[in-house]
Image 1 (cartoon, rainbow, N blue to C red):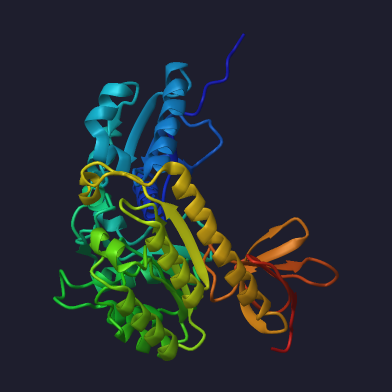
Image 2 (image 1 turned 135 degrees about the horizontal axis):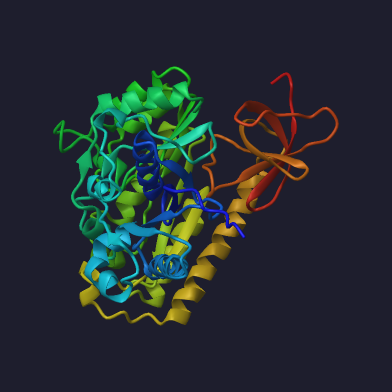
Amino acid sequence: MKTKNKPRNKVNVITLGCSKNLVDSENLITQLRGNDFEVEHEGSGDANIVIINTCGFIDRAKEESINTILEYAAHKEAGHLDKLYVTGCLSQRYKEDLEAEIPEVDAYFGTLELPSLLHSLNADYKHELIGERSITTPDHYAYLKISEGCNRTCTFCAIPLMRGKHVSRTIESLEKEARHLASRGVKELMLIAQELTYYGLDIYKKRALPELLDRLADVEGIEWIRLHYAYPSKFPVEIFEVMARRPEICNYLDIPLQHASNAVLQRMKRQITREETLELIAHARAAVPGLTLRTTMLVGFPGETEADFQELCDFVAAARFDRLGVFQYSHEENTGAYEFEDDVPAEVKEERASALMEIQQEISAAKNQEKVGKTFRVLFDRKEGDYFIGRTEGDSPEVDNEVLVPATGDTYFRIGDFGWVEIVEATAYDLVGRPVTNA
């Protein structure tokens, strides 16, 4: 009886963690395809080579990465895979431990070892492919990573251990990549980095994000440019002038603040105070009317008292952010905070995270109710069931609100197109609308 052979040299790339990891995977896929490999991203399982791009940021992310490695190591042991490779942040940080604990993996690579990973597959690193990145997102939006690494010394954060010092890409290389993406139908760019506002200091000796934004806004075909992960300390306020002047720059800013108690901020080494943060928020909202502000907060940091947490709650209630996420502190070795006692119990961290999100849920619900009866330009991402699903200028994929338009009667939106929608119903995290043809 004949048996059916698996296709040879088909690679499945698995991505864990953040959008920055996703861009790394997309660059890897581009290089492999340039070397005539058949490649899929998080595919169906018929590949004979698997590469796992891991996350090592906090405990839950590390656990997910390890479990994924173990799952595919078992597949390899069972004879379903020829080769298994691991790359990314977890591998960068714990390579020796992983090699000892999970020897079924053929090789481990760090975050900056793409050429070595390709070499292990008998593939060449093709410099001519830089800027011609494959994308795994829907065709109409893509992430654009403008720099690598981080020079900040936040005591809770292990990213510099895994990603190294800040290295900016040139404006010319980013403009070239943006033009390539636009030629493929991308309409929305989400700028990402470990720290956006540091951009340019290393190569231009100045904060060059405003200049970069102007250059990217000139790229034909790009209609939305969205800013993620902007550090608040020494914020280049010129960004707000560009944002207000250029319609291509979304009135949207993701600015992780982490806390509002000066005592906690000082122990975190965030280089900013509560008072300075409030001034920055006020300046942003005055400079860019209608600005959507997204932030993240960290609860349970060592030494966080009930008074510190209450100060954070009061701050969130007063600031009324449009979007807010909450992380629970993870005690990470080799970080500055590791020398502190992890003295906030796990159940208290959980309670504080839930309490803060309850405050934000009420704010989000009220802000969404204010949108009822108003008309917004919406970019449609997909059709799901009986709804076309899209986003407004104030919403980033995966993390923010979605706009649902019932797919009834003559209602039709092509995926990747913009349309005008009147909001008729709202919950804390979703909007329901109807199409408007004469907006």
